[in-house]
Image 1 (cartoon, rainbow, N blue to C red):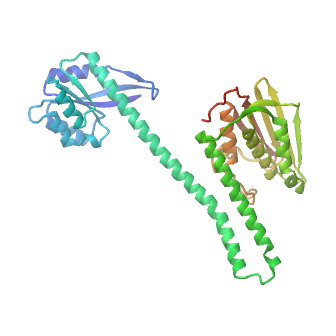
Image 2: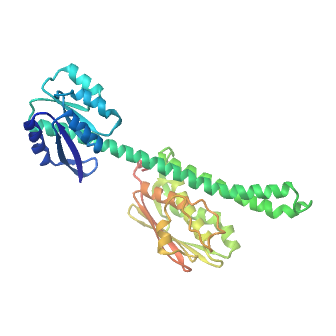
Length: 381
């Protein structure tokens, strides 16, 4: 419920009371903000009284008589500098000329209401002013939120890149100063660590590009019949070396074929992220289980692991950008913190969803549901 403070400035008592009576009982629905709007009406009989009220507590809407005893409504607008405020002004006058209307608008008035007018005409003018005011506030709020999100995004990105860059710089300085002696093999471990750091930054950049392409709608989508089983097998193959090095088994359970109309690249992103995480956050000699099911036009992807798991509080944070669970068990595991947020956005494109159930020291299970696309792709949202 929005209650808009409305100040009526008119030297005629009957006009002030009539407007107050009409608006005090008036309630309007604004579909744009899904809310009801009401009006709290105050009155002033002179320009001086109006200026005092406005300077003390500026109203949302000003209903201002064009001709007042000591100064005109136009002079009052200049005194309160209405053009630099959120207040919406409706000029009221019995001298309804085009010249007067143009002059009032130049001074910052939003609308013009000619005397005499019916209550319905008043309500129509006030409704238009309220819509303009509330939507303008909504736009400003969204702009402020956008700037805040952008600032937070850049801050987190800078933090995430600063650590690996500092590490690489440190290793390079050690090598440049020959701190470990003149033997090249003495620096092999530093080189290996630097390469790992660089690969991590490259992965973050790739994830950022995926994220921005999906969010902006600039990613070109090619909707074809995809074999989800084949994509899952490719994801398993890409992680097999890392899994074998830690004796982690990966098993695929599916009634082949599992097909859907989709962009193959998007399904690859989903499975690559889920399988990679299931191996990275697993325990040595652990297991990864991938299950694919199809029900009509819905494909369900389930990836379970026997890894370190998460608490309920940690699980609730997972699908936000740059979120990585940081604790003693995960501090040596690299990641961009973007993969699962990308999975969630892709699930949304396919009118689906993603969720996780997890238990510390037991493991995690990720469930993704994707609806098969029609011939015309759904635009990213």
